[in-house]
Length: 410
Image 1: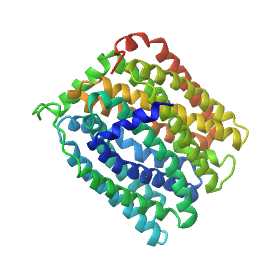
Image 2: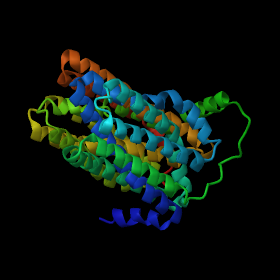
Image 3: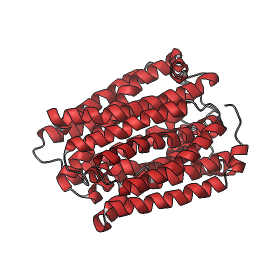
Image 4: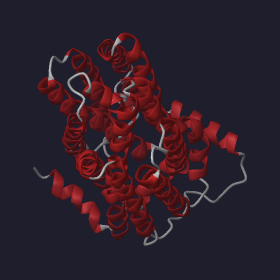
């Protein structure tokens, strides 16, 4: 397969290489911490509602803050904000470490939600800046390679992070995952200091923030291709992407041990790696849009089958496919937006995408977790998958104007 050598060509760009050296440990640390937090919350409460709340407080700030942070990403310097965020995330992880290690029961579910919510706010600020930065680190012909490599590395971390968490949980508990994440955030901050601040797409303007956001909103929904991507993202994010957030509860259908939960998380990550490779084969926005649409329909079917899985082996196989489809849908969708959006509005369009991509799973995990305590997780998953399929088919029926607006080549 010739995909990998071509994608790795993005690392020839010095700035992108430095960014990646810091980004990979950061992603590993984040996934290890998320896995450890989810398992710790399940061990404390054995409640799907608490698991859903954990995902909600981490992801909901994306919805609340993205209108502001997207505008700021079009006005403020990227690296200055990203360095500050990494320091804040390191502080959050250190607080979790201290409470888990020496708190003697002080790390309660409520305090865990508060600290995770703080991290969610920091991530909400960081996300549009980080997404807007990547296209500035490589020349235009290498952009598709950089986006594909970002996807592959993210999903390598999604695969390796839970495995790392499983080893840390077995050897020293969740505290080790928290300190590892703190060190990784500090390393990423150091890597960001090696980068040169890119010029803004346009000079800072005194135009009111609200007017700038409304302008970005009008632009995103008046562009047929971007509008199609937003619709696909709603279907996938709200109803399918929330499944990994409630994996502790799903693993409990087949057994309560931490090993099974970590294995399920790792299997989702392994499937995600395959998804990253598949996305790397998509070079044009139009082809990537078709991949996103197809993956949304596949996600719906997989979620329905997960609700019907009779045992561990079928569940693990389906979770592998879920990871693949999630990444194909999410990364191809994001790549189309990054390739297509006007650079002067890119931060605002990406913030809108983030509201859907992050806020959807937050709301979905909270709803699925709460309803599963009432009627059972299998029934809720079946309903979510069916609704996702309806939305995906609706987007497919209105795909032509969106596809026609996208160029054959980036």
